[in-house]
Image 1 (cartoon, rainbow, N blue to C red):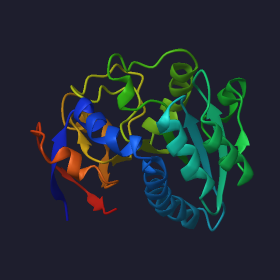
Image 2: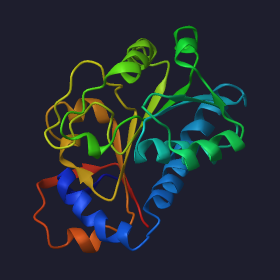
Image 3: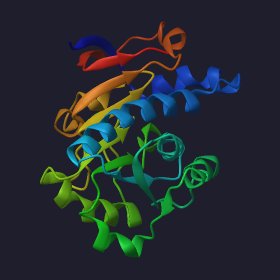
Length: 235
């Protein structure tokens, strides 16, 4: 049953996060744990359809916290054959170490062309709300998404977007044509306005809201609007 929730801008969400981060609250770990649980549901579904074989998962890891969330979540997956493609200028160290220790393997950009159609599921952790000034994908990230789009658009590969689909503006919902349309968007703390505006509804798939403790900070802010989500994961 869909649930109605309030919708906020990226700036409002960052403002609600700021005091919690300053206090050392483990927001990333909360987000990653919920992302892992939701992703595991999809992994189990795919594995069942494949007769129990491991689900082939690709993590697209950007430089920021979304990449860290994706890598930490991937480290917790069971019955998954996980490959990690770093598409930013750096990679989240703790997240990458956790994923590799759990058995994930690094995938080099040059390897993706041959492998692009082989994945059952992609975790899109390239960009988050920090890219609100200009979220268009560039460089390795853009090239990787371009290679993966045919299999995604054909329905052969599922996509779980971390917080927002990478390349979608988190406030106005604008996007160019190089964005992976998500099967599921797992958004943290609050639904971002871009998920329900512009191209957002066509790119987000089902939206699951994960509560990570931002409610006190958001309580005094004026929401942009209300929207429906597929479900809410409580803190």
